[in-house]
Image (spheres, helix red, strand yellow):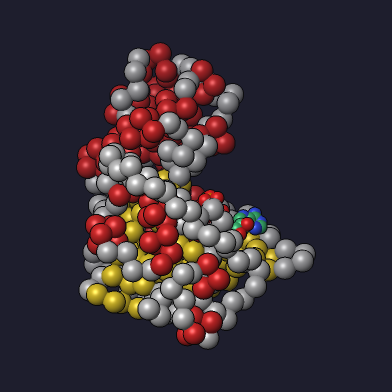
Length: 347
Ligand SMILES: Nc1ncnc2c1ncn2[C@@H]1O[C@H](COP(=O)(O)OP(=O)(O)OP(=O)(O)O)[C@@H](O)[C@H]1O
Ligand SMILES: [Mg+2]
């Protein structure tokens, strides 16, 4: 059906661009801006990455660097106005093998409605913002299942119960009839994951899924996501400001700073051999989950520049202890410094 809609409207035309065989999603030179009365906010400023099939991509960076807006652009959930995708493409491989450019679809059209949930699902930092307080857990999951699959309410509730079991929620029959406020934070996040996975999407975008939870529950949720990824064959984009969270689960990692990716590498390589001073700063400033390190945590000094100015220098230069004369002479491009390892730094 989706294919039909896309072809009919010709809106998802990929315009001659190709998607790498191993990839399911490719974001190319994406720009998202917010046109405010006073200024233009460059929230995402030329981001390029690809998500490989059945792999996990971690996106990390400090608050405000554009992680959520990148994810919202992929879901076409940017509030417009004032927000707008002003450039780039987002190529998605659909379940039937076709490729479409998400930026060319209508945000509210039927093709995009189908993609949300059935092809790409997203879970948010604060489950209470995405769970509806006036519906029971069972009704919410069933609703979403009925929207995407032709099932009766009875069968959809059966699917919901099965999903609650898959996310290892205790007493799933009871939970099905409960309201979100009757559950703990960890349980709500499990319900969110059940809701996201209920239509068997090929991509799951998790935006800070564990930030509101304590460390033990965080580890359980991450572990659960790994298990589900194996059984559902899904690809995951894991967004976090904490490098520790993704050290165990990501295959690839992209580090964002002020709307740009400044370093990108296979996760192990990035953790063992960080090349950008910003990544090194991030690594020094967070405890790594599950590792018994008692290292002293060192915060990165200084402030992130305003995203309203178009910078002609390296945006990290004002905070960087390694900066040289070149750093204030231009914006360093993302260069491949060893196979598969990219960094945007002159040094
Ligand atoms: N609705 C909006 N209107 C105007 N500016 C916005 C809006 N939403 C986000 N922005 C701006 O876009 C930039 C990127 O925000 P984004 O939410 O993507 O950051 P983030 O990396 O997800 O941060 P955090 O770790 O705090 O979630 C920020 O400068 C933010 O102020
Ligand atoms: Mg965010």
